[in-house]
Image 1 (tube, one colour):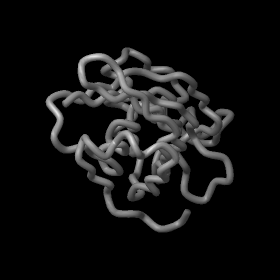
Image 2 (cartoon, rainbow, N blue to C red; image 1 turned 180 degrees about the vertical axis):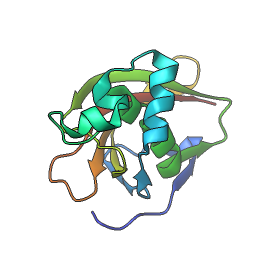
Image 3 (cartoon, rainbow, N blue to C red; image 1 turned 60 degrees about the vertical axis):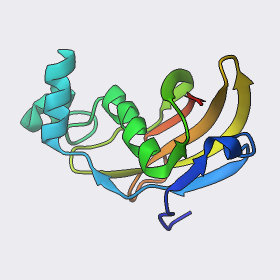
Image 4 (tube, rainbow, N blue to C red; image 1 turned 45 degrees about the vertical axis):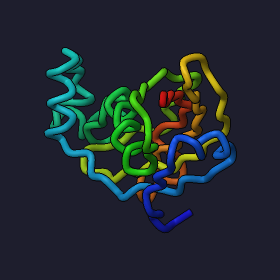
Length: 156
């Protein structure tokens, strides 16, 4: 898929029917060195491949790279760009079933996410549990940065 799709917004009553729904792709986002440095400060992960721009140019990736967990954390931003549910009292990021960091994201690269809701299950408390397959792509790269199955819940 090459075109960005409009955000899918559905009422809670329709979510149960969304298994198999392709949500499309988000807008491109640039991962800046400032973002990488801020993430390093927040997590105390100042490994040189992320934060030492000059040394990283001579390293295995030819440039500083984003932390894998920084790229993964952007799933929430991208998810909210692709999907929302109305008529709910609570929205929960429930977790991840599988995550793979398949290609590093160099500082200055542009990324986006494509996603598909693969399963919807009812849960106690008038809730719905969504299993979503997400792929964070890197512009101009054949292999994606992240492939993840993430879980969310919506309660009415």
